[in-house]
Image (cartoon, rainbow, N blue to C red; front, side, top):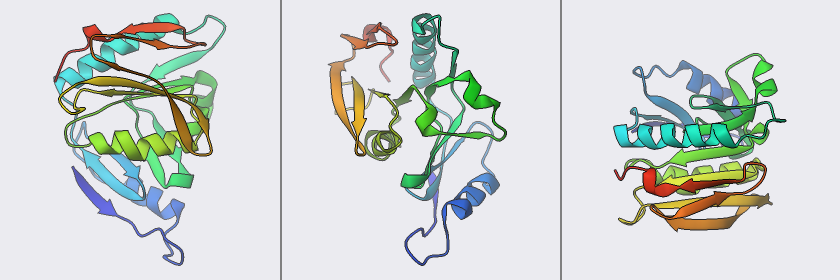
Length: 198
């Protein structure tokens, strides 16, 4: 992963708009993920086959759990902004009302999300465990599901919820192989034993 630091402290002259401009102008190879994490433009290579398999399996489960009265979609490449954390993330999965995407542009506010899912990779696990955790909590995303195949040699799934004052409550933590329940409005029990180990 490569990174381009942008000074964003008081008096630096580089605000949110400048960081986003740099993000927009970053020329990365096809398939790479370009994000802003704590004011730093990062470029990560495309994910592993196992990572993509986990995302695809969960994607299918989530579609079946969305209530019929909600016009929500599930997206894998949508950029979401968290300006208060100088962040612009591309979650591995994002549940979002379709109406939000009727706005012009290619970024939506993270606070519009109903659920974000991140699947850690060996190179960027701490971004998902720390920086994005704080970013999603600050934006008051109702649920953050962290699938962590790299957690101390013991893959885990952690469901965060009830965001308040920039922090989440851990609603559940299970090791891969055990079920994890995603509460209403999803009301979905996820069988983590179907996720491949990386």
